[in-house]
Image (cartoon, rainbow, N blue to C red):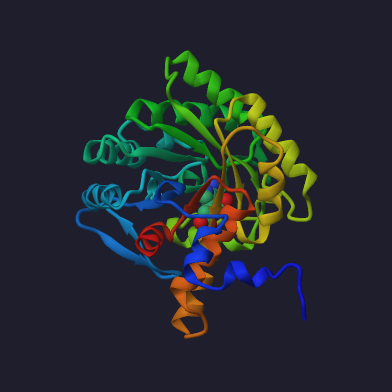
Length: 324
Ligand code: PBG
């Protein structure tokens, strides 16, 4: 054969493959989700997320320092709230001395340069396990947004750099931005979970925080996975309302959405490589079905290639180890 063009030329050695690689993962790409619990020297493995732990504040401080040493630049905090502190109004969510507020201060103290992002939603604080206030069978929007705004201010007061509303109520980004402005938190950013789908892949996370909905599901606020255009509508509205960073969640079954969102906005786009996506790889590796390290890098590269500028992932530490 006399071929004019031989595409395999650019694949024939590690050197040329590295030179023409289009998508390169960097430590700065990752956001590390961390689960915080009360107690001393607690590091308990989450049964449905092998190799991932809930940490007490002392261990959180240690972990944050280690992460910074590895080159990671941001953490995303979640708290597991004792049942007796849960109610239908998110009272504990705005407690200035609550676990989240203490976790923010602990992390800031341990590593002042680390960017601290905080989850803003009622589910870990809700006796119903829902992201908002419940009336009858309904998750009410506007009353919930008021609490989310107060919660955001409380996190900012404790030292959060970014608040990350994950609740999918309407109008919360505008309300949060306004509340931050009113309280002079002009340097606090908002990373909005803007296109968040009602997904079965959140299961392990709800085990981690004991936050599964007590009745029904989250389909009246999280998006229907049949929908694509709606993701653009949600995202553009969040940008308009003041989101600094937008997010698509989950990531793996939603790579098409990541790409479309990336092509539609001028703010950074993050994607959440969620708990179920983590556990699938972990379990398949444990069963000897997949090479764990290769699966991690291929997955994270695909999410970045789809258009994610930032990736929240439980594989952050593995990723920096593997790319170094
Ligand atoms: C709740 C919240 C969820 C996640 C982040 N924030 C779960 C849910 O919506 O039920 C999921 C993260 C994961 O699965 O890793 N506001």
